[in-house]
Amino acid sequence: MAISMYAASAPTFVQFLTSLSANLDKTAAHAAAKNIDPAIYLRTQLYPDMRPLATQVSLANRHAINTCARLAGVDPLVLPTSEPSMDDLKQRLDLTIRYLNGFTPAQLDGTEDKEIVVKYPSGVERRFTGQAMLLSLSLPNFYFHVTAAHCILRHCGIDIGKKDFNSAQHLFSGDCACQPVKA
Image 1 (cartoon, rainbow, N blue to C red):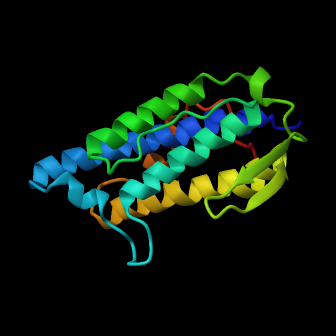
Image 2 (cartoon, rainbow, N blue to C red):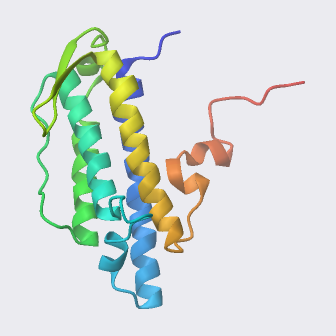
Image 3 (cartoon, helix red, strand yellow):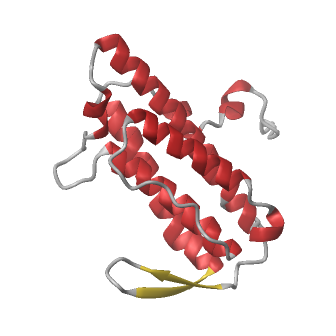
């Protein structure tokens, strides 16, 4: 059975952005409990040549928004580009999640062979099929930025783990539609 372009994009992005939003809630609670300025977390990097938490979250948002907009042939949601506070990041995640939840299978399915032109800030243009863009550009970049954000939060001592990464709570609670394999 083929996986639909819709199933591989909008709901997947929503799942991980929802987790990221919940992890930012835990970060805000950690900051309050430890009397730490939340802005410190937003500027934290894993290494000096890597981008800070605020940028990782913003880039995850941007990849999700642009992917679905390009596939559906609609204008992308435009988020503020100003330096965000923790509350700003949460609001931007919420806006993105609402935007992504507005996409339907009818808008995204069948876009596997659609020509997509991605224009980079450098002026370079790359052409993809919808499926190639999703699988070789969008999802890897999205997961990279979500993972980097998760790692920054773990590095800062936020009590999050694997189940906090992907919000697939049903996989850990027994509510999953999948059944255990019988020996």
